[in-house]
Amino acid sequence: MKKIILAVMCVFLTGCSTGTDVNEMAYVRAAAIDSGNITFAFYLDEQILTVSADSIDEAKSAVELSLGKKIFTGHTELVILGECDEREILDYMLSQWKVPPACRVANCKNAMEILKKRKAEEIVGILEMAEEKNTTAKCDIVTVLGKILNEKNGELPMLTKEGAVE
Image (cartoon, rainbow, N blue to C red; front, top):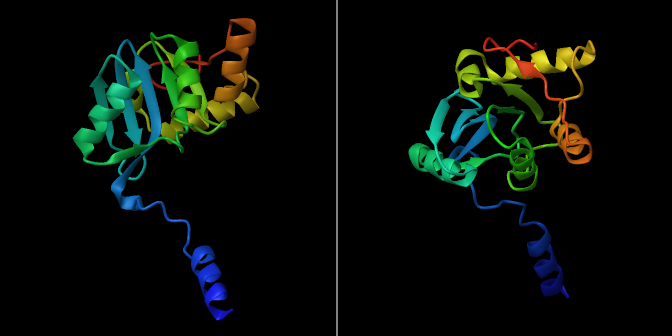
């Protein structure tokens, strides 16, 4: 009986470790996609990297090689879209990158440059404030993608190159 209890305790008290140390990962805070270029902004050191690639997966792999770390996208707060297929990108972000439903989405003519000029958290704050003041429609990824799929006309807030909502 003691062996059974010990075996059960070993199974339930092992923890939930995935085997990956937090320090071995790079956490994406924001991504800007524009004409085959993707800019990644990361948490902690606010590092920003831009890569040219034929697909989001290629860009992600290139950045992982550059950083020497795996990229985790599950905490992404912001996606800025330039010239790209909005429906395809947002669907991919939600289904493959597993970004949170609260991830904000915006549009900008020069999407890559905005992450170099303003911090991602500032842009998210600007979008949240614009939503609260009703100067823009809700811009979380689920709402925007739903509008694109149902109405074929999603309402994305347009950002200026300085990061303000137009």
